[in-house]
Image (cartoon, rainbow, N blue to C red):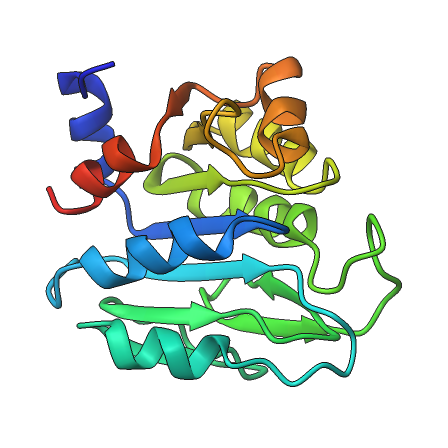
Length: 195
């Protein structure tokens, strides 16, 4: 589908972009981080399932390719525009009323910490319609319920087209519960992210 005026306007009125995914999501999320202009004028939070106690090269790879400032979330970080934040392993990343992050050590959700649902859910109450959230490839339904809450609170919600997802379960779960307002291919998302 071509990007319509409605999605473009909603995107332009976004303060926070949430990118969630699991197995098979690294490549499209990495592509997104590469295309963001340095003056995106939004904050970006990336929540990717990562193995417990597994050292990840994600931050290094993203930082080398991003035109925006990039950092792993620390507790009490104030969310600032033109920054890509990566949710750390072994914590849930939440967003507080003062638009700062907090890290939570409670139990895993869908066997995952960070949980996409936890991050999406906390953002939905703070950013409401000033938020865009995308759910990418993954092998479980984490993120679908959080995406639905975001949509109900006025956020722009997008699922990766399951036909092109390496693991279609995650975006499919969101689509099945009517959580995604738009279903886009990665190419369409990358086009949107540059507008």
